[in-house]
Length: 126
Image (cartoon, rainbow, N blue to C red; front, side):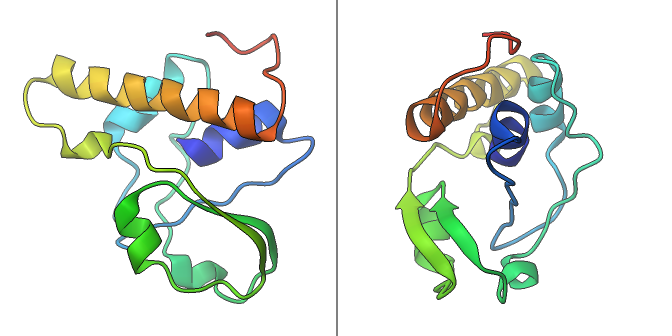
């Protein structure tokens, strides 16, 4: 969700790449939560951090404590930022409860991106 949000909100300034320590698939609840704010991540794929090991980055951002601990050191990362968000895929219960967890985290990520990387474009629904 963070990759999709940053690329839509600030794609003219940044190019975001997302990867995980244990890639599998893009969570269907994440796809639905993003579609609710008119961002299509259905064509995205889950990527391993190894794919980006030799790339140079201005920013390396980790978004959960497990990733912060498990991520390899990125010597080509100019600035490393850690911001922990609850993993919405860990929420158990009904579809409605799971969907609400993804909405909450999506909105927390969006607010954090806005605060950290610039102004929120007016075209994106709050």
